[in-house]
Image (tube, rainbow, N blue to C red; front, top):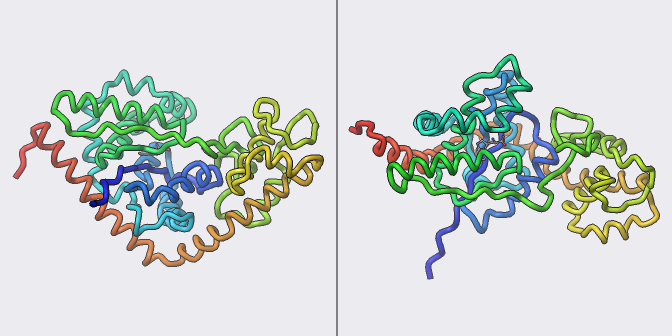
Amino acid sequence: MEELQKKRMLSGIQPSGDLHLGNYLGAIKNWADRVNDYECFYFMADLHTITVRQDPAELRKRSINQLAQYIACGLDPEQNVLFLQSHVPAHSQLAWVLNCYTMFGELSRMTQFKDKSAKYENNINAGLFTYPVLMAADILLYQPDYVPVGEDQKQHVEICRDIAQRFNSIYGDVFKIPEPLIAKTGARIYGLSTPGDKMSKSVPDGCVFLMDSPDDIRRKFKRAVTDSDRENCVRYDKENKPGVANLMNIYATLTGKTIPEIEAEFAGQGYGVFKPAVGEAVVEALRPIREEAERLMKDKAYLNEVYLKGAEKASYVANKTLRKVYKKVGFYQI
Ligand code: TRP
């Protein structure tokens, strides 16, 4: 009779770089597809970005432009709650409380902290260290069932569960214990010039940005690294031909074709035909997204309205959890 309560999902992306094909195929595209089955909250984690030094003007610009790009990728703001983390103060407020229920030792073991403190050795700030606590607050405020993340964020969801369990064991059932959801298909898109590494904005040559022009996209695919054995054959062999496998995955995800179908399609044709074909499929897939994002980016009033409404809806849910937490730990309420 009545509609079953939908399961809730929440995830965030840092607006620390321009969105690229890896973000789209690995995350955003899947997010847009699940709107009918789940109640979804997605936010830009701007608080997290300043753990690494940011250019303020760039951060401000990306925080609004990325909202346009998310919507253009198919995330409907009427059906999903889209918001900016810093617009919902409860994130910072709960993070402080959770800091007092997180151990120095467990934070020092986080691989991202170790990696980032090696990379940014002149700015090993306390925020970088307590980054997972803020992320735990992001999640626990909304009592989600699932947290879709990339493999690299799995450890952060695990520490979130540990913190929640610790808190619950002292105060009773305050937080729902969320499950990480690691995407399978298209989950990992590798760099076109460095197929051993995840596609990343820090290697712009091998990174296809959502806002790239068709010519830029074609050029990047023409130069994509294939394999070193010069076999010149479109065959799926992730071990020995990671570049070719990556291109095949991209093509499969965009066209819905299977790997054997793709091998058959390009049998006897070599990379000279295959690489531009993948490039063209990407150009066509990204064209409507780019055009719609460009249109939306000019409509600041609309985007502001989306952020405002999103923050309102998010705050309503988040504040409910925060009030409960404040009460449990003994903060005097009026
Ligand atoms: N740390 C995540 C990343 O860099 C972004 C993020 C912040 C997040 N808060 C989150 C993801 C909460 C999922 C849930 O990718």
